[in-house]
Length: 284
Image (cartoon, rainbow, N blue to C red):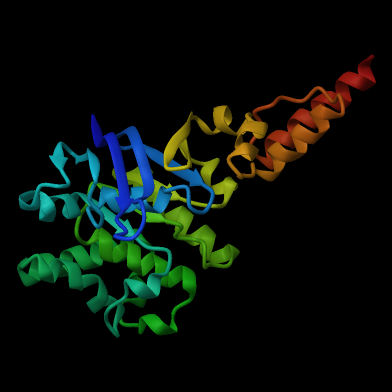
């Protein structure tokens, strides 16, 4: 079953003195429940605007977007839409509202009017899910960037959404923080069956998804598995995007005549394939 369905979705910013600035144009998209989707695109491609449409922060100016069958433009379903899709922003400081981690995570459930026992249960479960329960009494401003982002994710989890949309959640983090956040979202997808849509500029992060979407000029121009997408190096470059480093190395070696697969994604795959080429040459 699909959880997000865009039908000829368009969005533009109105300007009284000029023509409207079109950001999304005729986007058709279906995302299945339980999937892990990476959304790629150069700056200005419309990917962050699409993320905000999923949470009804922005509403369509043309077409429609359905979240679990609910029209995001229906004001009577706004609350339900935002309970279904949780949005995590790039800068965790923009989502942290309290001076204590535990209180911060409780903020959402408290606004739902839940009983205190249910709030406590959700807070504890959410903090354990992201590996931050031991920091429940800590001050968020004393945490590392990766820890802050995991607390921000816990705050969304406490609302018990079915889908998690993350808008470049690792962009401001060091390598360790990136690993922490990625491990967390993959575990949520794997262990809880939560749908994950992650916007990223890191191609290695996208390589771990089930499906990759590429946006350019407000439209989806590529859609497939990571191997299908990253094997099309020239087309990705036309969209002003890179590929994972092992894929780039294979691409350059293939141009020099080395017989390597075009769909390699990881360093381990590259080493195995290159060793096979060397062995084949030695056996001749």
